[in-house]
Image (cartoon, rainbow over all chains, first blue to last red; front, side, top):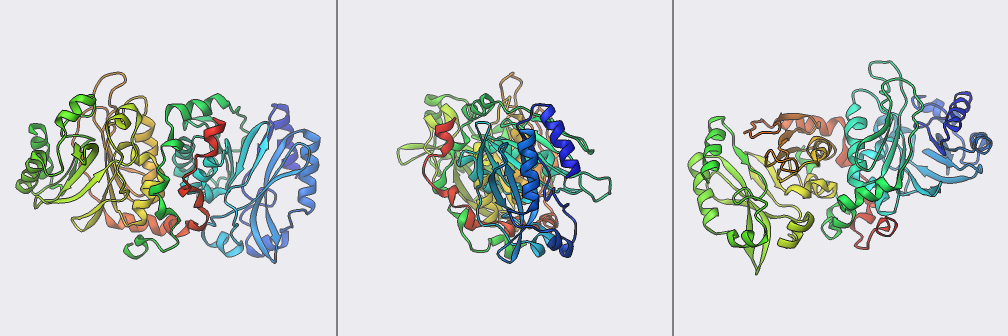
Length: 255
Length: 255
């Protein structure tokens, strides 16, 4: 909370309307299963109250992550708290990654969660979620203009930050704020947080170390990208039936 | 045909089993609508016979494109002719790009067309098609291991070759042969043909000029990528219903 307070102050100073922080930012990601259970809180717990007060005091909307205790299980969740201190959006990670994630959390069942912030439609997904083009496309089709992606990306998966995230922004023609942890371990978090525009180009990007990145979303860039290449209109939804088929893919057997 | 003969000889010399050529490679892409109609042929026309003879003589399977005349309309089509000279696969472009494409051709209705070549499953899409993650995903789910993509990509869309194509290979965990025209006009074809592996990294890539690229597909790389990150198994098809919805996207109104 002390670190968040500092960062919120820096964001407010820079005139930012929205601050996005990494996956499980309020507690840390690699706590282990037992400790994660201990620090878990319901969606209306003291963490929410503290961040809500901070948002209200600073005038900055805040996206933060925490292990949510609900219905007797844990979710890997994020809140978007608006500048009035209200929970504007609440998302539970739908694509769980690897042993820790899948062994600790239940998967969310609501793919597209959005809020209006500063006149723009902001959507929320978490880390591994953004690696699935289907989910980002669903956001674009639902009108998301900025996709906020708290993440915990480790080495050697820099390709995701450097190539996959720009491709997502370009192909679904929205802004993406991809916000990662950072450390110096060889297999640790690789930083590389970035704000990418709908042309796939970075508006702001971090190197390996800690940083508060500031970027401005220009709605004209969104319209220009969609005019230049009308991906969303040129789709052929009549041909995409295989994407919603719940059978195991053929590749399961062949690989 | 003279140029194709030279290139096939070069491919055979290098021990290649399959040669992929650009979009509408047999006739050229920007002929204009009238000229395209003049050079169009049915799928069993003299072009097919000539390429078939070349494949049989060289022992190299060949992917070539031509304007197909069928059912009173034109399609932007490709054939995969195997080394016995047989048509192993026939695909009609399903996502038409811009004025020339959409004004000249009817769109195909079969999204996933495949053939077995050299013991691997080869899929066919054309140019703009590959920019839609839905279509490449459908190929991966159907077991495509190598996606052959004849294309006609112009400047300033180098991002597609450099970033979007590697992202496709990585996210859907297949090999992609992206094969473009090249010229020196400022807004002309940008080359940048490449063979990309399922880890998103290039196995072979061309600069701006003409080239015959040779690459070897290692099935172990495919299995390794799918083991490292099981994207195809971690999908949530139950959450992707919006992708097959034929209604206009919300963004149509907002942009």
